[in-house]
Length: 195
Image (cartoon, rainbow, N blue to C red):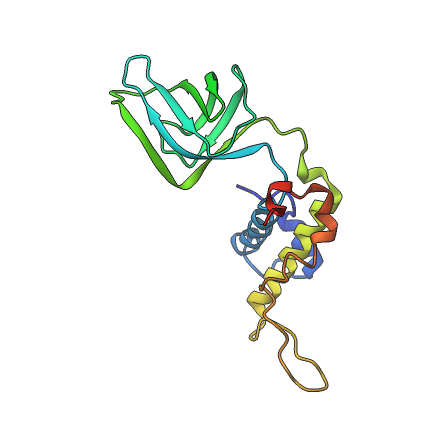
């Protein structure tokens, strides 16, 4: 999967590295930067805590949530982190405040009772913003990618002050996102701001 928030060509240009490094290495840094930024953006995604399913034929799967979910009957959602029977695009056929039900397919699906999903799965509804087209998000991703690249290339992963020759704090520390938070402030997930 190619990163779309910062592309390999863009990162090569910003770093001035031309074709010195393989595409796989540069793309990995681009994808890592995108994944970091995506973790803070506001998507129409809700974590599910458990699932169950009925048996074939006409098997249905049910996902359970710890908080009320925003999904509706007839909506197509993308489920991930729940195993092969549940993962993929599914159309909701029934719902309650804390659960959704949908059809599942496959051979010899046996009944599975309610059981916890660890780590939590994710249910994604339709998203109305393409963050790969938002300049602030792209700039933040580029800055994160540059920091990741420079951390990989420098022996001490930080700078050295000219007056005391003291290494600066680790570049990949807790201030990594703090340096770009102002760029993505309008798109931060409000659920991540609690606590």
